Image 1 (tube, rainbow, N blue to C red):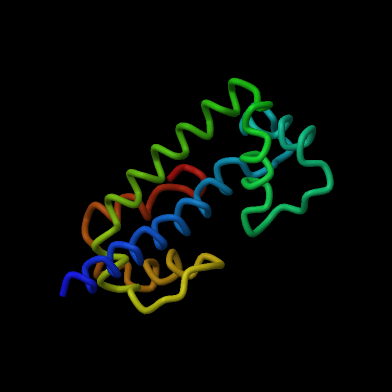
Image 2: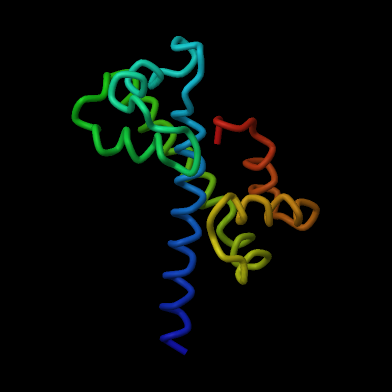
Amino acid sequence: MENRTIYSAIRFNRLALIVGVFSLTMAVNVSAQPTVRPCVEDAEKLCKGIQAGQGRLAQCLKEHSNQLSPACKANIAEAKEKIQDFTQACKDDMTKHCNGIKPGGGKILQCLKQHEAELTPQCKEKMAQPKGKL
């Protein structure tokens, strides 16, 4: 039974990581409006040639974390806090409804959306927040 608990904890942490990467990618997504997205200039300068998608920009910015502007660092810190809030609010729902789903490509979030009517109120609230605002 103890091994099952450890396995569940590892699986949950993996799910949380997938949700986190997705959310962080949304938080640092490059757009044409630098004032709206504090990491745009950093991404353009530090991650030239990196194609957006699948967490590539987030990974690039992470690799250059010591070179990021204060505004971008603050934006990422805020995104991480929101990711933790989302994960905490939805952890039981992820375990209950999406336990057999292999993480990657937004599959966990898609699973949660498919079970939206069955989600806890806390998770529903986080799911209703606009993309990039998790």
